Image 1 (tube, one colour):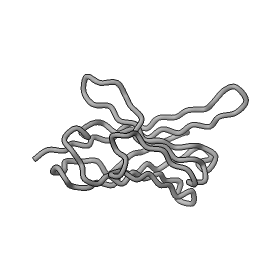
Image 2 (image 1 turned 30 degrees about the vertical axis):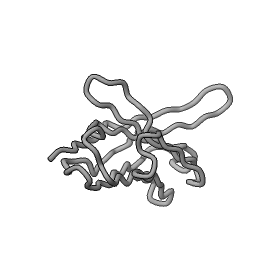
Image 3 (image 1 turned 180 degrees about the horizontal axis):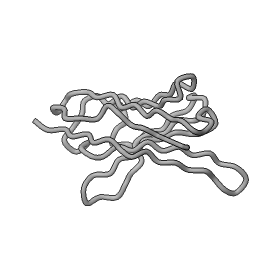
Length: 120
C-alpha cells in the first residue's frame, strides 16, 4: 500500500537546524512531484516547498526562502527538507505530499506528519 513516512522532526532552539525526511513506498516515486506542507495550531495547512519529479525545479514559500532547501533522491524514494535558521514561527506539524497529474485528474498522497518545535 502507499506510504509516506516522515521523520527528523523534534525540538530545536531558535537559529538551529533540522533535516526532515519522507520515505515513500507503494507507488512510482520518480513520477510524482513532491512537496512539504506545514500546519500550526489554529492555522490552515500551507505549502512550504515543492520539487518536480526530476528535482530540477524547486519552489518555496516566501517565509522560508533562503533558509529551507527541498531535495529528493529518486533511487532512495525519499524527499528531504533541510531547515536552517529556524524561528519559533516555524513550529508546526510538517507533512509530506505526493502528487501525480494525468489528463484532468491527479493521484495525491499525504504522510502522517512530523512535529517541529522551535523554542528556547
